[in-house]
Amino acid sequence: MMEKSRSPFYPEMPVPPEEFVGRKDVIDRIRARGLGQVAAGRSYSLFLEGEYGFGKTSLAQYVMRLAAAPAEEGGYNLLPLYVSIGGCATREDLAQYVLRAATTLSGTWQALREFLGRFINQVTLFGVVSVNPSAVRETAPDLATPDALLGFLANLRRTSSTGGVVLVFDEINGVASSDWFSQFIKSLADTNSVQGYLPLLLVLCGTPDRRRQMIARHRPIERIWDPITVDAVDAADVREYLLKAFRSVEIRVADAALEMMTFYSGGHPRVMHIIGDVAFWQDKDGVIDEDDAIQALTDAADEVGRKFVDRQIVDELHSETYRSILAVVGQRILKRGFGEGFTRRDMLAQLADPRLERNFDNFVQRMRALGAIAVVARGEYRFSLPIIEAYVAMRAHPAE
Image 1 (cartoon, rainbow, N blue to C red):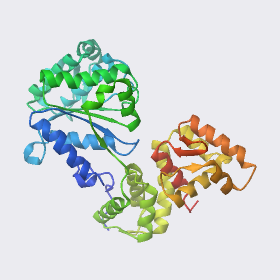
Image 2 (image 1 turned 45 degrees about the vertical axis):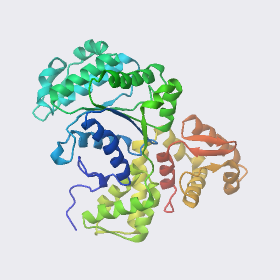
Image 3 (image 1 turned 135 degrees about the horizontal axis):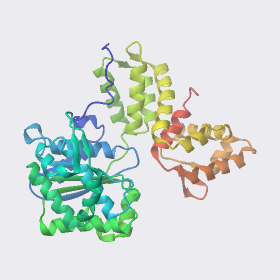
């Protein structure tokens, strides 16, 4: 067995498309309709939509690295601009976020350092950029219109001698319900189409609910997008990925352990990586057996809870009051699979204790208040996020 130095479940970027398990078709579509079009001098708009934690951000970051690579390395020679806009409230905020993101490019593109010089305090030997916040705040209002922002992006493109720009807006939850944001994005795409400022791939990342919110606020925006669904990963793809990752470090996986890790990932890329990574570091003999997998699930559940599930939800799910309820919900997932939800009638029948009826109703009320479950129909519920369901299943696996 190889000496352990780096986990195969968190490979360095850039990574080949096959590392994005179950995503080859999506990447091929983005290449053909998005990157290829922009490299040829045209513009395009995509909406990467999927539930929280299904890998939209990772996919967008991979696409940007692919975009920036030179043609001889299979890339497109485009300028990648990733903008996380969580906390953004106004057009001026949006312009400020874009400007801050642009300054980070000067650590890679030498030509941009002079162009963006007034917004930069320092670029270290390792390319880390220190931003001048006062200069950014002063200039942002001047970029808060579609024309001005497109002119700025066109200058970035010319200065960097790239063929176009890939502009990604991520973390759009806070602005998706705002009238101004939908109108601004629609105007940005339309103005560039008419005025021809630059070849631009505009990418938004969000849940299906966020896309619907934006359409409800400004229906014409629906016409500019090519929605691309980033969905759960098929069990067969999860198995293949886990086997390949363990094989790369000369670790064998027993069939029962493989099936266990595959099932509890729930098709969720982040959970899959965490389970595999925990099992990798725990392994002592070069073989992942069923006992290893059970221990990995226990520790992986803790890590998933810490990283991706709201602390209040975790505390409630761990409370003595709801432990019996959680066990029954978890067993229902194990029996019926992910995404099926649960009903009040079935839950009370399985709890088989009239005294727990009040607790169950309180559990539902509390979980709804925390946003952990949603009502499907009267007396029918489902988890609001797949990663919460995966967490519940791992907490309820047979070892517990």
